[in-house]
Length: 190
Image (cartoon, rainbow, N blue to C red):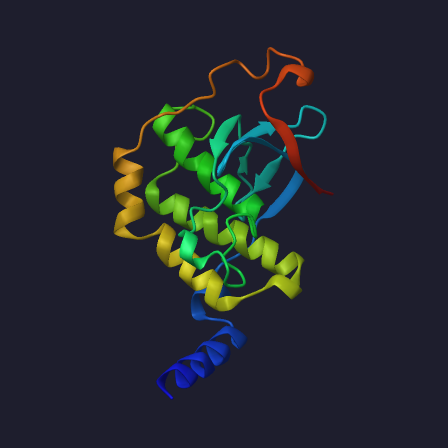
């Protein structure tokens, strides 16, 4: 009975936009995402030279990720089977969030200006952009729980104690044919 009641409450909660969702302004994606498989659960985001991946925030500032390793969304494995909690279900938002962390840890001037609080806000803006663009994937409960996770004390500790993990080669200096890994995903925004 308790499980049934919990399920009903989750269904009700996921059907109504939360205050957090309503209060978040969506940004906008453009360009193309290229992701290469390196090994199990370890991937390389490589900027598409012909159509760079960009996220324009609600205030007009632009985030342009550089090459970096990613695991998609850092979703605990035991949640992967629950709708909305795939590490690649909201890949563009997760890549932007990973880039903010990478820029912070590596001191990449283009985006190292962001604070931990900014990283949470950027996740909200990018996640809402995806949910607004594709309402069939909109899930208010997932939105609230992902924002809570990326703003948590655990995430803050990763922000403060993480280290720079740049790709081992200058990906801009080699032709696409010699990039490591196999291109497994390209997401194109108009």
